[in-house]
Image (cartoon, rainbow, N blue to C red; front, top):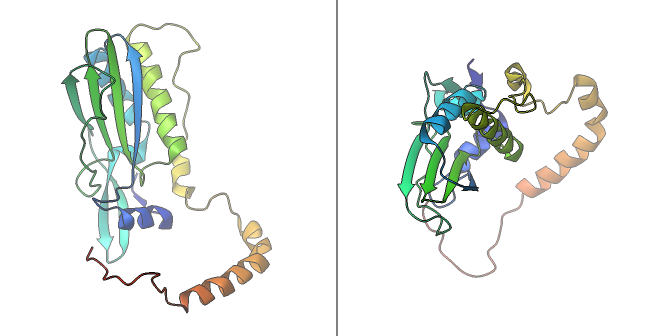
Length: 207
């Protein structure tokens, strides 16, 4: 499934830079050691349920970008043997033009483990992040032999991703919003016609 980036996704892609990366981080703490085989199998299972997380971004025109699914995509995963609870593990940015938008680090000692998940914000928002994490924990439990019917992967609707840029707005809803939108256009025009003035003298640094 090849999807164009929405306007919002493209804005996040343009704004992403080394000094201010559009990344989300989640650090999970566990008692006991995570089983490497079970975790890696769970990641493979769950990644296939979240299309934007197993895709890279491909430029198809001057200002046109599409999600390009990666066959057999695997997030870069690092396993670190050291005491948990220390400083946040060092990491690097995510370049969606070269890699998928997920990296994983596991820190483990004899009695505990930490799972650090790094997501590119272009791929998912907070709700998407925790949906992935929920799936990952369920898949890991199943890999570890959990048999309860309550522990299962719920069905998703990836076909709805094609409409993610409409935000639930139908033509009728858009028509009803027209008066308020016109007021907003007037305010936007006033904003664009003004130039920002710094409070203190300074020389802008290059990007």
